[in-house]
Image (tube, rainbow, N blue to C red):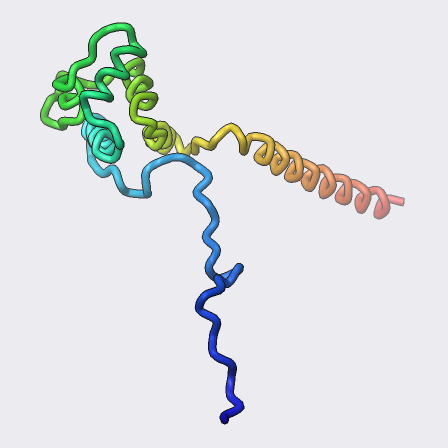
Length: 155
C-alpha cells in the first residue's frame, strides 16, 4: 500500500476552476458576423438568426405579419438574409418584428456593437447602477482625501 496523493475526485466539480461566468450581454459571439459593408453584415446577422431559430421561416413570417399587421412572406425573409438582394434591406420596424418572432435577441447586441455598447437584460440594471454609484463614491472619497491633504499642508 503506497502513501501517495489520494486519487483526484473527478465526479465533483471544482467550484473555482470549473465555473464559467454566465454571459451577461446579449449578442453574437465576437467576429461571428463578418463583412466590409454594413448591408452585408446586416444580411448575415438576419441569416444567422433565421438559421439558429427553432421556428420555420413560415412560422417566423407569420409571427412577423401578426405583429406588423401586414403580410411578410418567406420570400421577403429570404431577401433580407441575402447579401445579393441590394434593394431589400430590412426596416427597423421589421427588424423589431424579426427579433420578436425569432426570440434572437443577439440581433439587438449586433446593433449595439457598432456603437461600442452592450445590451443587457433589465434584471441587471440595478447591479450596474450600484457599480456606477460605488465608482462615484470612490471618486468623491479620493477627491476628499486630496482636498484634506492640501488643507493640512497649507496650515
